Amino acid sequence: DTGVSQNPRHKITKRGQNVTFRCDPISEHNRLYWYRQTLGQGPEFLTYFQNEAQLEKSRLLSDRFSAERPKGSFSTLEIQRTEQGDSAMYLCASSPRRGGPDTQYFGPGTRLTVL
Amino acid sequence: TQLLEQSPQFLSIQEGENLTVYCNSSSVFSSLQWYRQEPGEGPVLLVTVVTGGEVKKLKRLTFQFGDARKDSSLHITAAQPGDTGLYLCAGAEGGTASKLTFGTGTRLQVTL
Image (cartoon, rainbow over all chains, first blue to last red; front, side, top):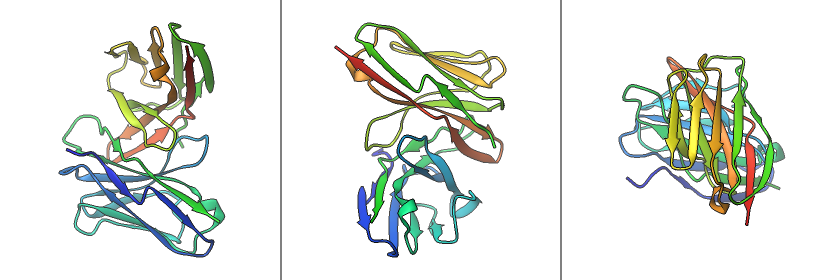
């Protein structure tokens, strides 16, 4: 068990460009979550998947954001036409959801800087 | 929208001192998780508490979930420089909505 991995760890882009992040959850974890964290704040929920189904999206997830988990394993988060306000740490978490509390394990995050 | 407030926001203490961090909400959570986060890294899970009144210990860290499952505390005994970091509490609503609502965070610095 190697933990949740995220790539890239850092991304610098110019305003208006598209970016895509990848998350590989802990193997056999069927729930996968995306959060966004800005400086000095706690993470904020964006969306989550159970297997390949996207079950909930936050109102923070504007039309420029799209997330997929096509085979119920890894997930991608794409931001189109990036804006400076998108600069943040994007965190992915996974959980086994085998009954009991839904304990979530986080990856190291992708730090996005939009110039 | 459920909100979690943490206090204090910042804490700077010397090695060997004790401290308590509080996490409060007006909402009930089915479970509450505590994380520690280092700069530039993701949150690392410390503990999950589920039952009202539950107390869990992790070496020098003691976590308590309030009887009404609306609040929690983290107590560190004899703090060490390695305890330095951002401490986050996060509540889960339970049921089909498993997203976490995070607290505002407590930044702890332990000096020699």
